[in-house]
Length: 281
Ligand code: NAP
Image (cartoon, rainbow, N blue to C red; front, side, top):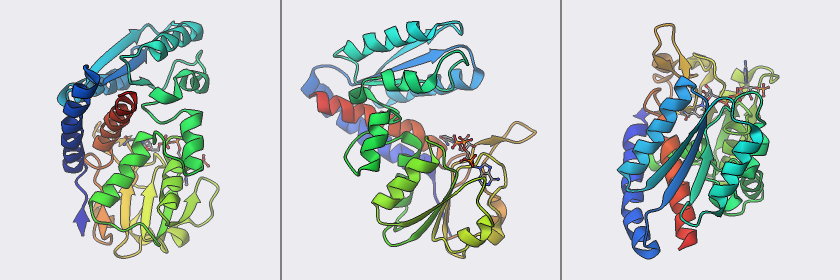
């Protein structure tokens, strides 16, 4: 069994990004720059934004963080995004989600210039992915594909099952696996007998948000199991959607939580920002 070390793989990619940042800085005459907008004081979001700032610094990128009060109006937020869209020295823009209830997330995400869509969640980026065109990929699904590739797990010709169909994880990861010539099945809350489907799978990606959802009896021996889930145990510790201790006895490849998909998400955000900066050069 291969334990896929997301921390190590993310570190390798960040090193590659850091090297390219040096080259890109020489061409642009400035550092590649990511702008992050945070609205409100949500504890988790504040922590994620701080980690993004730190990650930028680590790879030699500049970051701008706009921290806005909870009561910021949608129009105020749209005006700030418009200002960042127009700044030549800002390559990537992302708005930390979730937003307060009085703001429409889809409107805000689509207000970001498609050329600076660091999260890869803009309707234009999603459309390009659907059509198989080059573009910004959403970070977590892109991280899943990198984990499989860099662990030597073949995708082409394999049966892949994705559990979950959200716009940020399930649907895009399914499209990316399809683009890599896997035969893809997507399961969701209305799917009957998910175990019967996953037992046929060479690759299972679980993005449900329920601790212990994927049990050992649902996994074909030797299959690759990628756990996107991020749940809290009663003691506050992070846990995924996979019954890790039991499934690791059956799987051929498995990601732990923490230390699997998690470290990849910010890494692919840095990747998108660098790609945008290179396009600006
Ligand atoms: P989401 O929007 O809540 O979507 C969950 C999906 O799971 C939905 O498609 C839902 O089906 C499906 N589902 C729920 N209960 C199910 C069941 N009993 N059987 C089968 N499918 C079921 O969540 P998300 O944003 O995709 O995130 C999924 C998980 O990944 C969460 O734990 C989240 O915290 C984690 N996550 C981690 C990262 C990271 O960086 N590691 C990034 C993003 C998300 P329906 O569509 O039918 O409702």
